[in-house]
Image (cartoon, rainbow, N blue to C red; front, side, top):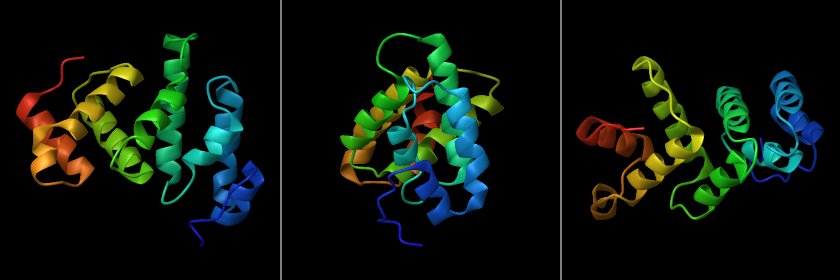
Length: 151
């Protein structure tokens, strides 16, 4: 599979990544309004090593965000803004969001998507990451263990 291919439509994603992507993409398209997740951003989420579970989790988080914050900057726009200015790649962010979301679930906790992004961004900017750059998920795990999460 050519991971550098430019997807222009959802059908391009399905043609390149496989038919199993059709249902999650259609679910995303019918669940979240275009205002909160445009086709362009949905396609962007699927780039590189994004997996179907990553996509499904992001759709869930973005749906909840659109209900909690129906006005203002959509969560997906904030997500890509943070990713674009990050030293970590999209896949690393998807992995970190997945790890953090799983941790919250194990702890029977919830947090708004914007707060989750803020916490992950703080992890990236932490002194623990500046001295020796770490794998993003390992860094998030270390930060949660050392500092916890209030949110």
